[in-house]
Structure formats: structure tokens, C-alpha cells
Length: 299
Image 1: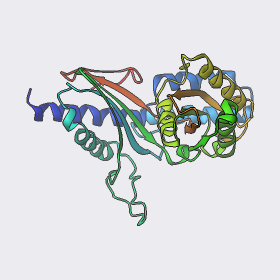
Image 2: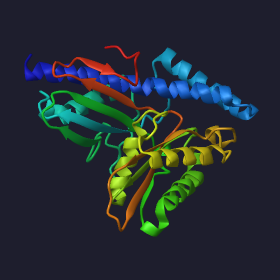
Image 3: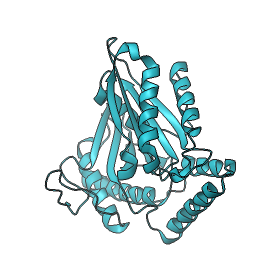
């Protein structure tokens, strides 16, 4: 198979996958939404969940995006150094986004920062956002698709704490931010918490946390305890679905941490709204693919 044919095939698959993630929630999010619905006894919250579920049903039936805000596209790529399309991958993703934008359709959400002019293509300087991880000696490729909605991005923040503030300070930072901004971000939310050496490292870790399953648990005992404590505190806040009261405010809390300098600790929070659209698709060198987030995806 020539490089051009390879490129065309991967573009077509990714265009359809982007479209699918705009219309269908990931399997784990659908399951968790059902759990929250079953656990709820607040009449108003139950009405909100009913509307959410009807929204999902109509999106699937009509083949239209779940939410009118189809997001600002972000990709996290974990690609082997021997993957055949390594050098062409960013261009493939841009072409796939262009196809998906027209076919789905996706709302045009990319504007120039200072002129505020819409590019009209869902692309522009730094758009879509692409984060790379190169895996030496491997020939496969994993792509995380995340259309970041405007409202769900609003609570995002990062800071650098002193060691004396400790992990209690990191928890307090996350709680303050989510309790202040979370009600406007369309709960229930998935909360991603990043810890690292600096504010920018922590922010990227928080984004990685949003790409994990809503039921994931950090392997580190301390990080897992932080996840559990934050989830409990946020659910006990009573914010509830759409910020109008209820038993549960979050799908879950995921913590991703990396090593840091002993004199400082970066902490960041990122949130995904109830329409937590994310996709994960894996390719081998022959472009055979599978998705663990959308087992109903077919191409």
C-alpha cells in the first residue's frame, strides 16, 4: 500500500471517528450516567437526567451532535517511531477534522485570539491542538480525540504551591475552583487533577486525566486517596446535575502525577461536562484499528 493510499485510508477512518465521538458518548460515560440516574431521588435532578437521556437518544436517532458546542478539537498522540504515517499524521488529522466538520456537521468554534474572527474551518494557529508522545521502536499508534467545549473548559486553572501547602493545599485548590466554576460547566463533571513540577506540566497532566475512564483509580495509594476524597467532597456539595441540586456532581475524579522539584508543586484542574466526549482509537502498522471507548464504532 502506497503512502498516499495509507494516508487517505487513515484520514477517512479518523473523519468518521471524530464524527462518531460528536454523536455518541463513550461507553463508560453512558454507563456512569445510568448509575447516577438510578442513585438519584431529587425530583428536579431526575427531570434533568430524563432530558439528558432523551437528548442522547435523539442525537443517535438523528445522527446529529449531542451538544451544539462541538468543541475545540484536541488530539493526544502516542505514536511508535516505526509507524508508517508518523511524519504525515498531523496533516492526516487536519484533513480528517475538515471532513468531519463538513459532514457531521461540527460548529465552527475556532477564532483568532485578537481579531476574534472565526477561521471558518475549525483550524488556525495551534488549532487543532496536538500533543505528541513518541514511543521508540514501536510501529503502532494511539490517538485520543477530545473536543473541548467552551463551558467545560472554563473551570480550568493551574498554580504552583509551596511544599508547606502540601497535598491538602492541592485538594483545597481543586475544590475551590470546581465549587466556584463547576455549576456553570454543565455537571455532572469528570474532574481531572494534574500534579507535577510546574503549572504547565500540571495542566497537561490534568488534561491527560480527562482522557482516562471515569472509573479509573490511580495505582499510587496517595493519589487514589486524593481522588476518593475529592469525589466525596464534590458530590456532597449538592451542586447536582446542571448545578440545580442533586446527589452527585461528578462522574469521578482522576489524578495524574509526575515527578517534581522538592521545593514546589504544580497543581491543575480540568473538567469535562456531562457530555464528556472523548475517543480513543488504536492503529497497527497496517491501519487495522480498534476503539476501547466506542465499541459500537464501525467503519
